[in-house]
Image (cartoon, rainbow, N blue to C red; front, side, top):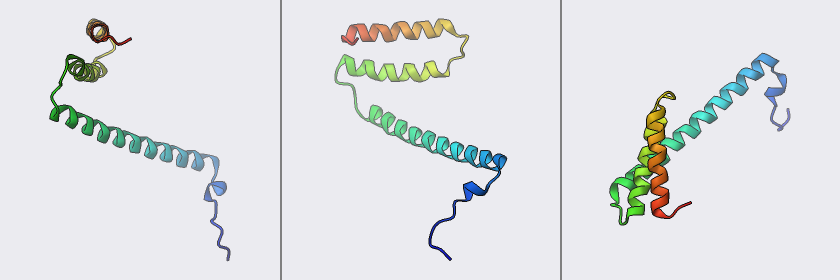
Length: 98
């Protein structure tokens, strides 16, 4: 007996290795998505708990919501996408951001 770990990946066939790689990638993607949802929940709780103290802070909150809304739009909904882009450009211009 040896204390060295056995590399099982080396003993799998190509299709089995591809299946393992796919399962690992899926598990990693799900983990990242879960972490993102948790971070978003923390951010949203912070946005709810703290009132904006200036117009730039209020614009930042509105920018966050508009980006969420834009992500849910159908690709064909160009009118709303253009409107959102115009509002975000206005926020940037009025708050002095580039």
